[in-house]
Length: 299
Ligand SMILES: NC(=O)c1ccc[n+]([C@@H]2O[C@H](COP(=O)([O-])OP(=O)(O)OC[C@H]3O[C@@H](n4cnc5c(N)ncnc54)[C@H](OP(=O)(O)O)[C@@H]3O)[C@@H](O)[C@H]2O)c1
Image (tube, rainbow, N blue to C red; front, side, top):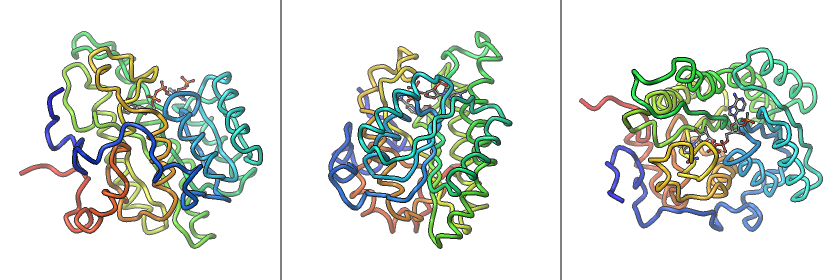
């Protein structure tokens, strides 16, 4: 495989400091500092793949409640059972909803407010991709549906849940977290991938907007590349299959690490689950000083 250009961010922490699988510093079951009792977590796209792994790693982190969203009920059932096997005290809420439906998301927000009264962590992970074909060969509804799931879905959850997130931060005099799952594809222009890569680029900017509008109110928002993972979505496009070398557990652990303490120095920024967290922390001052890991036009 050839080395990707620097602006993809792949080797940001140094190629020798990349991970493909979960490791002790991000494994809640063996690292007490990652425990997050009392927190309420919501994960979209939680039925399989990366979202499922994020939910299970939060179970290992002993959170109080996990809200699971996706359209396929049977997959949510399986994840709920797996959570209960890890920790039977966790309250699990299964919501088989489509993230693109405004009313369903609003109703869910009312229900979480009623049932839990707080939200500490929102993970916008549900994702979709139109087939990778050049523009003239693309199907407009499939192209636009990619934006509906990746961008509108994230927007709807932010619109519906930011009030509760802010309230939770205010009441606890603490920081709450939003993790918007983007992709390294946000930095790439691959012929055929316009719908997916533009929608994931927009997610980066969406995170920056959440940060400038709600960061001072205690909402810490990051955009995340979850790694290259051989999931149903990832394997859809044949040309990228050789790059799917990471486990879903790597991302699950990384997200738990992100929210284990207020990491406001990452607010509004892009991070990759493949980056070693200790090396990333050691780069903190330079990242903040030079305002790295955000979108700027090169002039
Ligand atoms: N795999 C990779 O290598 C990779 C790389 C970069 C970024 N990502 C991103 O990682 C995220 C997770 O993807 P994955 O690879 O884990 O794929 P996956 O295994 O196919 O999971 C996608 C999840 O999103 C849910 N979803 C899709 N459309 C939805 C909708 N309209 N409403 C509600 N839920 C919906 C799916 O459930 P239902 O179909 O049941 O609704 C499923 O739970 C995505 O945002 C993806 O773009 C993945």
